[in-house]
Structures are given as structure tokens and as C-alpha cells.
Length: 326
Image (cartoon, rainbow, N blue to C red; front, side, top):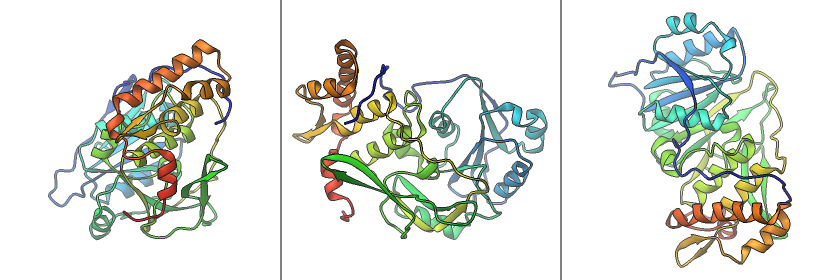
């Protein structure tokens, strides 16, 4: 475990436990019998004239619904764009919110069985998912399907991730190598096709984790420990239209929360537990005062106790079994 020094709040139990102030405009669900059982959530981060092209192309795909998340309402004239695209639901947060929080909100705004999360920094062509492709992508009914991702120069990005252990410490290996159907630890940049019901049952993204990397990894590890699967596909591919940023893996309070919820629990008699004996080890490595370390530890211990029967394995056993088909 690594050193951190900060405070920790309570741990949310459900994906919709935290509600942020937001404006929601428009949105017409596609009621056609031929509509795909997939909704699209697009995370917007820039002001761009390509936005209209992206929306036009998405509307040709016969998705059940389209939700556009706009972190900065200054990026476009909201009245004009909502009149131009009444079929699209626009969600604008009125306070600071992480991508994970906004994905949680979007999941509550759609009722399809699957949700494709993408970004406006990707090239989105017309007809990205046709009916026969949707059938192939969703046939295994797993938690998350990850597309192959390319950078602006059409070179592969390290979207293939796998767990490993180095001197008894958990590490994440990444690679640009992609094989269809291969197990994948987490969705790069949050991009993927999620099983909506499984996402909700897992509790969604933890809004108290602000770091995109640790927020993403927290839910991903939890999904595996609770018996779900994430896999890569070569049938779906996107490339970025701008430079991508390096994942920030800074060790901070967000790492600490992730660690307590995912790396510390162990299996005992068919349930996940955090042992009292683990507190001293945690305390000496947390860089926290005794009372703060105790508060953080107890919060995680109570969360694990609440969800103890959701755990199907613990991290050491998960790493040891990686790559072995069920």
C-alpha cells in the first residue's frame, strides 16, 4: 500500500445516492420496434462545430435514446441546439461533477438494457452500430464490452488492461494488444457498452472519488470481485480526433478510498470482510492521524460488511485466476 494524507467521507451504497443540481432539456425516446436496445451517452468536453456532425451521425443509428452530457454550458447556445435536436436529451450540471457522476445520472435517464458511453473527442461515423453488430456485441450479456481505441494518428492506445502482482503489491498492466473476447480489467477513458442493470446493481461510480483513474478502477475492480465480467471486442473501434491525456495515477485520498474498498477486503466463509487486524497496517501506511485513520477504516469496514455477500472473490485470488476461463 502507498502513502496518502487526507480525509475520507462516507461511502455511497447506491449509484443514485448523490444527486447534483442540473438542467435537463429535451429527449424523445425512440419507440420504433426496430430500435436498438442500446442508448448512447456522449460526454462532451469542448466547443466544436463537429458536435452537430456527431449528433447527426448518432441519429442515423436507431438507438433507443441519446443523452448528451455537457460539462460547460458555454460550449453552445443551449436553446438553439435543443430546438435543432429535440430527440436528444441534454443534461447540464449546475455544479462541479465528475464523469462518473454524470454517467450515473445518464443511466437513470434511459431505460434500454445497454448503454454505450462515448466522448465528443472520438470520431463518430454514421452507422457505428448496425443491428447485426449489436446482436454480436451483446450476445454474452456481460457487464461491459470495450472497443478498440486508436489515437489521433490511428495508432493503438493501451486500452487492454490486466491485473498482476509485484512483490505482493497489486499492479495494472496495460497493452495496445487487443484480441476479440479477451478479458479486460477496466474501460479506458470510461468508453464502453455497459449492461445498465448490472451497472446499477454494482452501485455505479463512487462520486466521492474525484480522480478519473481511481474512480474508473474502483468500479471496475468491484465489478470483477462481485462476479461480473468486462471484455474487449475487435468488432467495434473508435479513434480520437485530438491528443489524449495520460491517465493520472497520483496517489492521494482517492487512491486510499479505492484501496480500502477493493484491495483490503478478504474472503472468509463465503463473504467479503475487512479484518480488525488490518487496521494497524493501514494506519502506519496511511499518513493519517490515528483518529482520522480509524474513521476511514471503519467507513470502509462498514461498507464491506453491508455488501459482504456481493463479494465472490478477493483481490489475491482474482489476480491468480486472471485469464482462466470460467
